[in-house]
Length: 173
Image 1: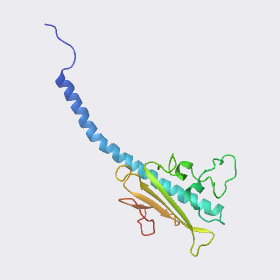
Image 2: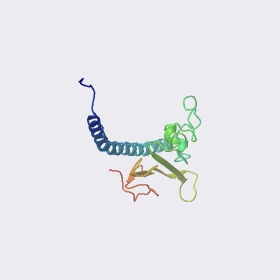
Image 3: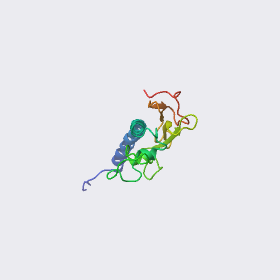
Image 4: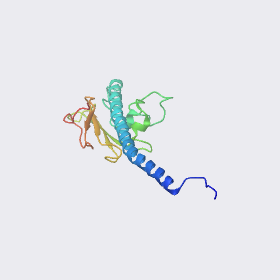
C-alpha cells in the first residue's frame, strides 16, 4: 500500500479552528483601535478649527469669527493663486471645512457641525461660535462627542453625541 501525502481532514479543521479563535480575539481589539483613532482625529479637528478661528479673528477683525466652517477653508479653490478673503480664508483643509468628501459625509467617522453668530444685540461682528464633532454611528465609528466654543477649550462628552456645546460640558483631559 502506498502512503498518501497531504493533510487529513481533521488536521485542516484544527488549523481553521485555531485561525477562527485568533480572529475572534483580534477583531474587537482592532475595532477599539479604530474608534480610538477616529476620536483622536475628531479632537484634533476641533483643535484645528479653534486655531483657525483665532487666526481668522485676527486677520478679519471687521468680521470677527467666521459664520461657517467653509469660510475657513478653500471653497473657491484659489488659495494657491489668490489672496485669502473672509469667505475663502485658506486656514484649514477643505476636507475638514466641508465636513468630509463628498461634502457633508463626515471625516474619519465623525460629522462636524459649526455655527458662528453675531454678538448680543445683533451686532455686525461675529463674537461667538461653536464647533461640534459627533460620531456618525455611536459605538461603531466613535463613542465620545467633542466640541468647543470661543474660549478654545476642547470639551468631550462620553457617551456622545453632544447636543449643545457650552462651558458646562467637561473639558477634554
